[in-house]
Amino acid sequence: MSRDLPPLNALRAFEATARLNSVSQAAEQLHVTHGAVSRQLKVLEEHLGVSLFSKDGRGLKLTDAGIRLRDASAEAFDRLRGVCAELSQGSANAPFVLGCSGSLLARWFIPRLGRLNADLPDLRLHLSAGEGDLDPRRPGLDALLIFAEPPWPTDMQVFELASERIGPVMSPRFARFDELRHAPVHALLGEPLLQTTSRLQAWPAWATQNGIEPDALSYGQDFEHLYYLLEAAVAGLGVAIAPEPLVADDLKAGRLAAPWGFSETPARLALWVPKRAADGRAQHLARWLKQELERSGQA
Image (cartoon, rainbow, N blue to C red; front, side, top):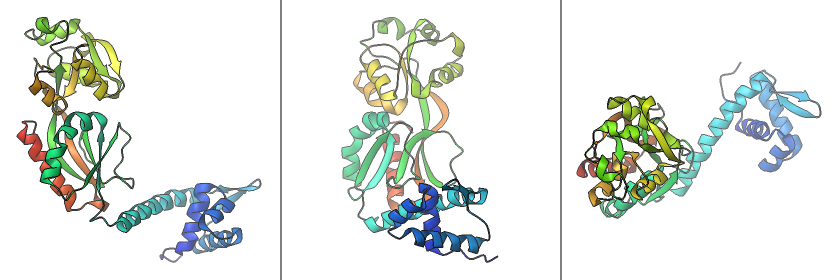
């Protein structure tokens, strides 16, 4: 059997048919006739020497070979579409789209955005917020700023920026602030602790590092996202746990206090950049982020 790739038109016809599960819909999307798609599918099967579809009533069903080729062709065409879109936009002039969590965006990035724009005026940074649903592998996102634990994905160029440090924080507005701020860490065992459902392991991990049995902790209000959790802490609703960079400005302004300090976790704050799209802009941004973290004592 030939090792050459099948004709591109045949692969396009197959990818569309497999994705839409319809020869007619594939023909409509490709702006060709039903017969043209059928002929291309036959060309592809003859080239490969395998059947890709079987009859299923009045429709078609993918064979095992068809399923394998569908998955591979879908990934390949997605990557081609993404790269072509980037090239057609002109990467040098297009904005650099950075994804990060809403809490990181609101509490750390936005207060520093003016300084970043002044220091890197040619970057044309565009920020995209999300909570666990951002993937730099998909077109439209150039990089992702994320707290995560190694090992790193092999398809990413990863710039490690800082170790993650987390700790309990509370507001002077909290009713028990004066009693707790000079108390040992074990005083937290009597507190209904605030937590976020997006990271339920934060309190137990911190407790283990600080000699507290995680099962002895008790919890009060929980919040869907870290941003809401920290807003609740600032409002004096209780003791929350947070990564240090996200509360650094609040600590400096006296809106929050961290009487028990911060403990390092296995995670890192890192900039993930797809290797397919890595360019000099990502390196400049990573260098600026690291310098900014060092300047504020968080790296």
